[in-house]
Image (cartoon, rainbow, N blue to C red; front, side, top):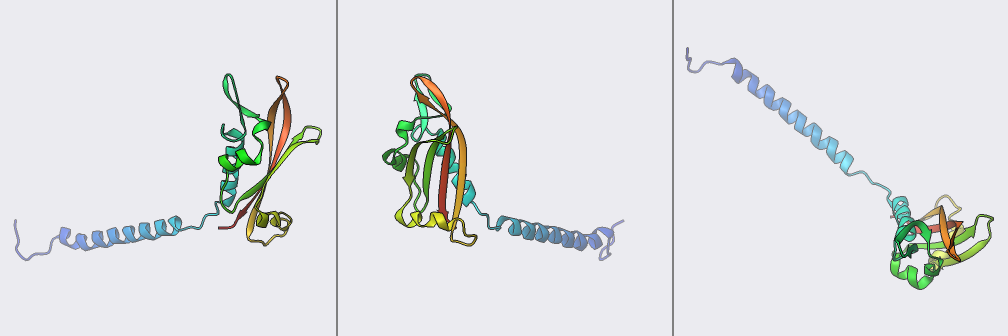
Length: 162
């Protein structure tokens, strides 16, 4: 039977379905907009990436032998300002490296701090400062007379807060 002008159950259900759809879309929009606009502190991650690049990149400190790049082995001849300026430098970020033997004896150091960041190292001890300071101690090997010796590479990184 076909009734003209009659109200069917489908016609009554349509506004409720539309209202439910709008409600779900609005909820999803607000949920995603709150989670996508979170401020994320990436300074620590950037510092870890810098340390990883310093140790494992062949243009930085990674040792390249006749069989290729050796993971975890550094070339102490590459540990100088000229090489490190080319391989890993970021404006406003400075770092200081010290290679120490397992007994604590300093083998080699290099300082890649700008003059204004040089002052900030003691300030890293203060809780509220405009810089993020990171200290990384990495176990590495370095070649001496065709043998690999173990050492600790201490890297202090100072970056401005974003």
